[in-house]
Structures are given as C-alpha cells and as structure tokens.
Image (cartoon, rainbow, N blue to C red; front, side, top):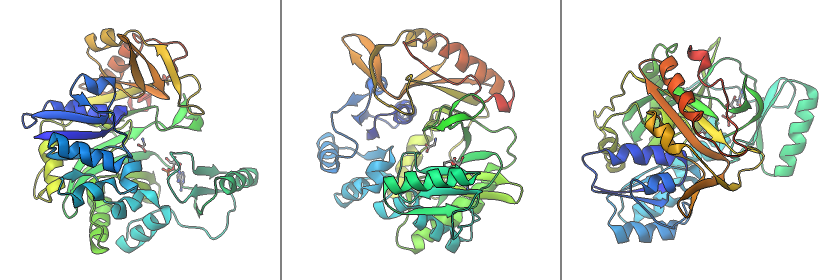
Length: 402
Ligand code: AMP
Ligand code: GLY
C-alpha cells in the first residue's frame, strides 16, 4: 500500500512510525511532514491545508490511502476533495468534521443521540464555561468561577468575534477516548489522559497538551464508554447524511453524575497519539484502510497491556508563542538509544543539525509494563535532550502512580 500522511506534528510522526512498521506498506509519503517523518519516508513540500496540492500529490505518487492528521484541512473539506477524485481517505468530510468545528452542531448531535453533555445555559453567570463556537486551537474556552472571570471572558470573546456558547461548569477527571469508524461501525482504540496546562500541578494557561499517558489503570471499562458515547454519535451523523470516516475523539469528564462529553474532535489527539501508537500493533494500517473503504466490519485493533507516557518538550514562550526557531537540539540520539521514542513536533534541519521550529518541539515517549516504568523511561530520556529555553512538565502521569 502506498500511504500519504498529511500533517507535520508529533501526532503525524507517531502515526507514520506505526504505519511504517506495517507489512502491508510499500511506500510512505508525507505532506509536509517533518524531520522525524523524513527518516521513515518521503516528505513533500505541500501544506496540509492545500487541497489542490494534496490531490495532485496523491495522484502523482499513486496513493492507495491518505491519512489526514490535523483538524484544519478536515473542517475545510480536503477529505471531500480527495474522495470526489477517487482517492481513499482516512478522515471525515467537512460535514462530519463539524462535530469538532462547531460546538453548536456538536451539542445538537449529542442531544439527538441522547448522550450526556454539559447543559447549555441561557446567560453567562459564574460558575460557568464560555466557549467560542468555531475552531480556536484550544484558546476559545474560558472556565469562569467568578463574575470577574465572566467579564474578562466575554471581553476576549467579543474581540475574537463570532458566536459563543455558555455551559455549566463540570467537575471531575478528564479523559480522551478514541474510536475508529467507517461511517457505520465503531472500533475502540483506547483511552488516554492529556495534561493541558503549561505548568506542573495543572497551573497556568491551556496548551495543545504537554504530555499524556495510556492506559488509564483507574478506568474500568473504556470500551463500554465508547459504546455509550461514540456509537450513538456515529449513528446520528450517518442519519444526518454526514457519515463519519476517521478517528472520533471524545473529551469526557467523569463527573459525580456520570460521564459527560466536553467536546468531540474529528481526528487523533496530540499528544495522545504519541502514547496510543506504541500500544497498537500491526493491525493499525489495515484498520485505517478498512475505515476509508467502508469495510471495518468486525475488525478489531489490539492494544498491548504495556503502558506509554509522553512528555512534551516545548519552547520557552509556549503557549503564548509557537515560533521558537533555529535553536540547536542535542541528545535526540542518546534518548533513542536509551529506549525512548522521540517524535518530532516542531523541528527543522539546518545542515546536519536538528533545530527547534515551533512551539511543541518534541514528544518523548517511554514504554514499560506499568505507567510508573514508562514514566521513568520517558523522563530519563527527556533529561538527555537539551536545547536553550526548553520547558517541560515534571508531573506527567504522576497521578497514575510512579
Ligand atoms: P474544550 O476545548 O471544549 O475541550 O475545552 C478545553 C478544556 O476546558 C477542557 O479540556 C476542560 O478542561 C475545560 N472545560 C471545557 N468545558 C468544560 C465544562 N463544561 N466544565 C468544566 N471544564 C470544562
Ligand atoms: N490533546 C488534545 C487535542 O488533541 O485536542
């Protein structure tokens, strides 16, 4: 199979790494890819949002499957364009990706599907959560516990422009739950926990995610949750003429009143994928292809019982800035020799030197029989990597023991 992976982050590196190990793969391509992916396949200078460019690339290389990583191209309809031209795509249509692209649409689907979510409130009064309606790269959500926080949120959202939704403030541990779908069938892909705040102890601003671990030893039955949450949503989207083909990612809060959906994403999580890929076996690529062809049927993706922990190494001003570039990175080889997986998120190559080029620079993943073992390996490897200004959290997965 000739496979084209679209995207340039550590999530796409992790997907490419697992796909590259599949016996069914003949050629791996990426657009635009990154220096980590370049060690596994051929990278092409086509942006992830450039639908026409991707179509022409897919036709030139004779892609049998295109796997789209980020939400931007999905919401913009890149999967539709490729499909209309006869190319098999893992990734939802623009109509189905609205489950991520519009909070109002997601609420409506959840209501029809009978899946529990935060109640929508008619007015903004603390405590509440105020969210921009469209895509906002994690920056459109304001958790307000005081009247002052409500005022500040409304001011900032007014500046952003566009609609917003107000909902009840929920409490409890948060999990990320993943399932593959071909539009009809749902295949569980496991659970992970993401650490969204920039600093230890969940302090500071929200980020794209500073680390993750999987499995969640304290979660009794992830597959039952997928049956209760993902399955009815997939059915509802199909009923609305927008079948969802791809990875459906539910962000859930386990409240004292039961699990409630915070949000859906129409794609794999970043950094959750960096802990899921080490746990999935060779079955991943056949399952992605089956989803794209509408033939998932009774396919199963086996996950090992091994644990994985990933620690994100970020630039010094992340998340305020994601353009930390040109600073030499040392120790990647040493970290890999120590047994860790080092996924590139924001890097470039200058001469023969890997340098920083982004906000979340690297995802360092350790694996082991327990979360504590995996965590020890991830941090031992992260400590071997250095670049000026590096920042990372010291408490990723500490809650899970170790
Ligand atoms: P979202 O982009 O909707 O996932 O929101 C980002 C983060 O805001 C979530 O990961 C939660 O930590 C928090 N959040 C969102 N909605 C709520 C809610 N209704 N109650 C409490 N926290 C929330
Ligand atoms: N880690 C959360 C996300 O990918 O949206």
